[in-house]
Amino acid sequence: MSQYEEIDVSKTKTYPIKERKNKVGLEDFAKVCQADASVGVWLSSLPRILAGEDLRAVIAAVVRAKERGKPVIFMMGSHVIKCGLSPIIIDLLERGILTAVAMNGSGAIHDFEIGMWGATSEDVSENIENGTFGMAEETGSLINEIVASAAREGLGFGEAVGKYLSDNAAPHCDVSLLASCYRLEVPVTVHVAIGTDIIHQHPKTDGAAVGETTYRDFKILTRVVSELGEGGVILNVGSAVVLPEVFLKAFNLARNVGHPVKNFTTANFDMIQHYRPRVNVVQRPTQSSGQGYALTGHHEIMIPLLAIGIKSELSKLDSET
Image 1 (cartoon, helix red, strand yellow):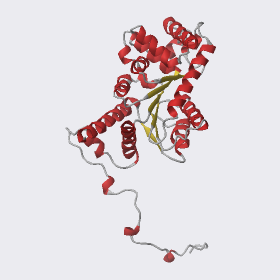
Image 2 (cartoon, one colour):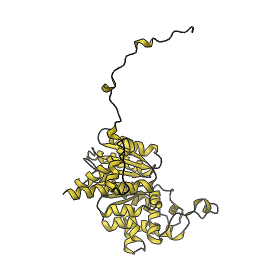
Image 3 (cartoon, helix red, strand yellow):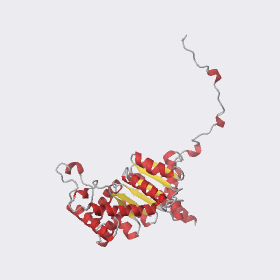
Image 4 (cartoon, one colour):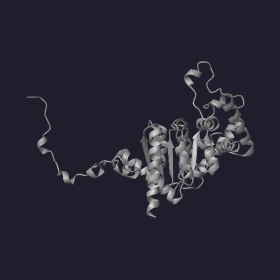
């Protein structure tokens, strides 16, 4: 017999299971799809649990924003371009689903190289051994010249690079986000942290011009963010630091100058959920109103799924009207 006293479990209180509130029921389970199922049927077959429900919720928010004429802003890291997703994003732009694009400096570089030469993304590990990483002459020279001219002409970084690609009929304009945004007159902004991009190593770099043009883009993005309230959507895809920080300041500034910016939807898509997107995009902006979502997965799978889901739901609405 133990020398220590035990709790008397005979006094335990229970209650009938029918009185318990449950988080999961059969109505939430996945449905089996046939091999020839449509995208809409497949989406409705996903479990109404966790990410399955969240993906549907983000799709629904984008569809509502489109129907109401509210902004849908696509913020992105450069890996999205390197994953070959530009055609998917351009299609959403052409359909009027995405109404603004924001990218970091490396995103603009990769997009520019795709537009000009149809290829990008060098082997960093190999080239850093002999100091040639990022030293392609044409990329550094041309973008720095474009940015210097943009500073003189009063253009933002993104608009200027898109204009250059379009005006010079770059061979692959059709798959350039910057050129496509310029063609469609969709605001496209580039947010640069000086010293992070390969073109900052080039002797033609003008720090003042880079700062002026990227700051102009910050103000353009802030104006777009100011219209998010009551139904807009902001998507952050693959930017772990720069765009979440830029967005939080743009959001705060918009409120500071008199725009309430409430009741909107945010979503972060990334392969790993990082601190800044989770806090600056998903949580803080929606803490008093609206809704934020975090979806984890490879961009090359998640963004095509998101895109086809949006188009499927919009097509369903069109067929009903």
